[in-house]
Picture 1 (cartoon, one colour):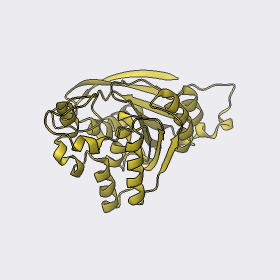
Picture 2 (cartoon, rainbow, N blue to C red):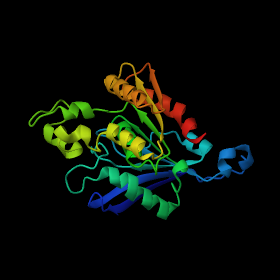
Picture 3 (cartoon, rainbow, N blue to C red):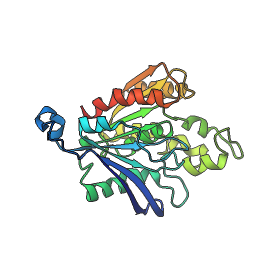
Picture 4 (cartoon, helix red, strand yellow):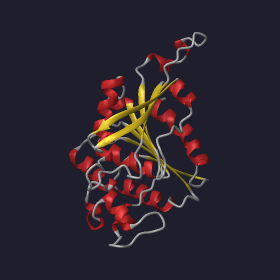
Length: 261
């Protein structure tokens, strides 16, 4: 298993940034390739997005990478909500959907086809997985969104000087843009879903899960209802659990076979 840390200059972020890369490239003589059909196909790629205050660390078990023959690209999204904000150097969505895709294709020969490229995130990263896959549906074939921080309707109601326990008003403006224009903008994943439908672009396969005692459960239920109203096929699961790695680890095991099996 190769674990690689890559530093590169990002034009989207206007600075040097980094990502981690996990590649299951070990070949064991005691396990013939024909015993695992996934080893005889091209390696697939998962882009893995962290949550608010998190960093680019891996939370997918390596045995899943080995079994299903997929690499993991783990970028650092800071506290960006993985969005293109109004400030210079805050194009995190474009960094993911254009710049980083192009970099790993050219440098590592990964993520060359839509059907081989998936995205997964938790909390803020769950929002990012949904939004990025909808922003670039020609790039990402499947997505997994766990306990997603689908807070766009709450942000849209904020007024100058009004923050909350998580962040102040200026932070939300820096990520989402003008709150009064958010719901009509492409920083709203609902806007992007409608755009995909209107243009007959391919809709990514959608897998969502959230714990019933998670503080974000109502946000996830609302987005689930939105997808139902728009007649968008998706898998949505509620289960016992809270906003923690116990729940996320369970649904990594549940959804990875649906992405790569």
